[in-house]
Length: 75
Image (cartoon, rainbow, N blue to C red; front, top):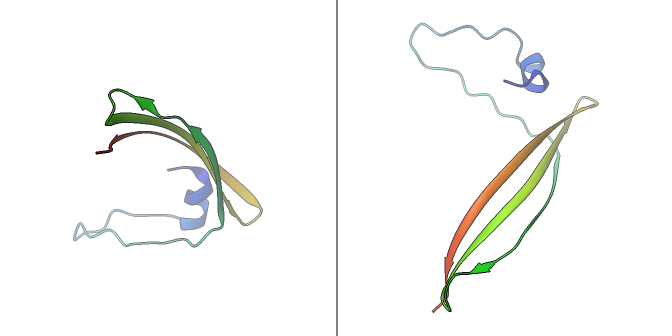
């Protein structure tokens, strides 16, 4: 777990009943990225995409990198 979230959660102990508590954050975030479409046939394509997501809270920020590949079909 990144220190960005660990310091906000405090000490987390393993629960006896194996039911971990759910914690949510509503931090502002900004993302940027790029991708392009590769046509495999007239109807089938793949789209690689690279993004970075910056999450801000308490005067700090955490950057998360994301890579995805989409597959699409157009009739």
